[in-house]
Amino acid sequence: MVQDVRARIGAIIAVHLGTEAETERREKRRYKREMTHYYLGYLSLALYIASFLCYARYLYVPDLWLGRMATFLLAGGIVMHYFALLERSRWIHTVPYNDLYGSMSLFAWLLGITYLGLELFHRQRSVGAFVTLLLIVWIVLLSVLAPNEAPPPPPARGPLFAFHVTLETWAYAAFALSFVLSLIYLGQDRVLRSRKLAAPFWRFPALDVLDRMARSSVYVGLVALITGIILGFVWEHRLSGGFSWGDPKVVITLAILAAYVAYLRLSRSTAWRGARAAKLCAFNFVVVLFSYTFVNLYLTRFHRFF
Image: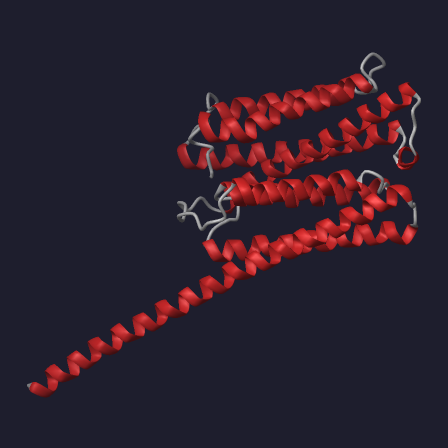
């Protein structure tokens, strides 16, 4: 009898010690992933900064290899940024956009991917300094304004919802890029009218090239937005059997879709072509910012994923 009691006590102690050891191993793995996420994030920021310096120098010295180095560094920063997002997902055991920090980081990564694709497609590196500067400022503000802490695990929503949110974020990133290109267009148009031209000015693409790049970015955003909307409606119908047409996020998203479709149509007309279309594109992004910030944080619960 005494031996049985001792055996049971020993078994309980062994299970307890094993549980503690497993918990300790999990904490170590969690801490390792957290630190890896930080290191990869710093490395991606360093590559973005190096890329910006090369792009900025390229405006003054149009050396082919310098431009290629800038593109290579940007691509390296995007790759490191991807692995940082991946490690963050493993650290918090969910998608990286589950909180404000992760959402803004995903936005910056998709912005970099979109610009890199446009640069390779249009073969224009002259605006790279502005885009990489935006990436750097965005990431620095991200680290200051958004706490980089592990959020509580969200309810399971499935891969369809994950694709929906990722595509919507990609659409916003593409619209942000079109905003930057439109501002460059307006600035260059103003300099041309003033006839006060500096040396770096001649490295900028022609106005029609900037116009085409902005439209290309809007096309990317619209494809991502429409696909994301469809996936969102499919996911919601599976979940509730209906559609929340009155949700503020749905309303503002459809308004953004209509605004950018109108921009693409008007930008090809004689009356709106040029600076007027660029102003419309820039104004549309103000609506996007309103949706991404104020609507997500204060006006909707169903679509508040962070």
